[in-house]
Amino acid sequence: MKPRILDACLTILGMAGLMVYVLACAPSFSPDGKKVAFPVMDYDDERTSIFVYDINKNKFETVAEFKNPNHKGDSEDDIDMAYSVQWMPDGKQILINGISLIMMLPVGSKGPTKTFQSQQDMKFWTILPPPIVGNYQFIVNPDKPELYRINLQNWETQSFQLAFNHDDIGIPFSDGEQLYFTVELEKEDQKFCSIMKMNAENGAYTPAAQINSEEFGELQGWSWLKLGGDRFATISKYQERVHLVLVRGNSIEKMIPIGERGSGIDIGNLVPSRNGRSIFAAFSYYDQHDQFGVMEIPFDGGKTREMVLFTGDGPMDDQINAIAFHIALSPDGKKIAASSVSGLEYTALKPEDRALYLIDVSHPEWKMNRIRIPLPSASNRAEVES
Amino acid sequence: MWIFSWVCAQNVEHTWAPAGELLPMCQRCTGFYAGAAIALFLMFLFRPQVDSRYRWIHTILVLAMAPFGFHLVSHGPIIRTLSGVWFGFGVVGLLWLFPGEKFFTGKSSTAMAKHLHVNLGLSSFILLPAFARWGGGVAAEILPWLALLGLVAIAGLTLTNSALFLSWFFNSLIRRLGCQTT
Image (cartoon, rainbow over all chains, first blue to last red):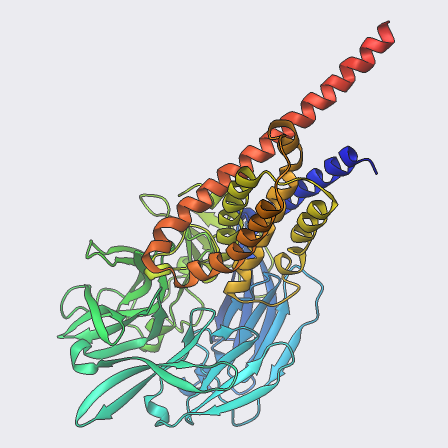
């Protein structure tokens, strides 16, 4: 081939490669940015459905359904209904965690559905999506001081024993690359919260940070976040007020008060904002007509912004509802999703509030779309209200 | 740095946060755009002679992205950035072919300059991911601007190539039409 024609072909290869790269990396081609997956609990029918909402097509799809054979109607068995869902990084599969199963479900692709049924004595605590590091998922056993490592490629399970009292071990979390778990320790009549960094391959753990509990009060909920550098964030109650606690190294960098002193506020999960300057949190006020919503807490001490998504009609049954109310942030950081029927067993929910909420947080006024969720098994065009 | 939201999915879990500051582009795009800026700078500096080895190396660098970009191989943040760097070098190398020949013809580079070009290029393969990982506040300040330069460089090369192709196409068309009329 003549050098000039060869160079023309190579230039076209370069431009084609560039085009494929940019398009593959652009937000519109990010499948998890276009769809929202969430569980829908139906406590009356003892059934959980996994829904996927396509934002562009404005359509719901039921991708999986589970009947709970052990449900007896008491609160402990209600936990059996808890399922969490998370997209795998390839955007073609959803990982579903239940108390006794893990399922890898293809979405929009033809791959096989892979299910892992746990051993009898394995109880998975799955209200918060268990963290994934590499090919592994890590799940704490609430009955024993051990952490299960499940290989998501071949379902091989390994148990890592932890040298702590199982009641003191917190839920593991990760930044996608490194696994952490928290543990409450007592030394010389002083209580500490230690953040342990765990090697995903061999289960060896070392302290990454240790803070005196007296400095931040009592931990609230279970959500911990790894921020950039050596920073972590969580929620605590200190002097009758809920605070966002920012930890850097072995000390508290900042405590940011949330809500009024003595107000009944509970925090569900925490999500870091795209610009790294604030945290979004799911919240519920249990003393103000049971309001559920989303808030943004800036790190610089600026005003916390709140948006109430739905309000209940009566008393909240259980604090577990507040912890089970979660939000998710889209990969581009512009949209927040929350569902009123994922995890909540909230009898006072008004029928019109049975919805998926999409909040555009890139808009100065935070525009919210309420999309009514059809009854499980339905696959309908959604009803969108602005 | 809003411009990166147009070309990068900005997945928070795949984004470097030197000194706690999230970069405006993902780890792979950090490598790609910053690598492209360095690659173009080295091209201007050394004006490499285009021979078959040059063509082979840059083609392989572009094609080697496929298994990583399409997630056929599982990899962590360092490899993600590294794959972006080599892809950036490959793309710049291929997009340089015509503009280099058209605008930067001159003396062929010396053996010393060739060695320096290759060594500096290879060093940046290692130094860029390391800088993103351990560069702290300095990396948080520099990398977004370097990536922006790379984005401008890639856009400039793409436009130049498009213009050269169009002018070549129209010149051939005019020549052919001219032949027919005579």
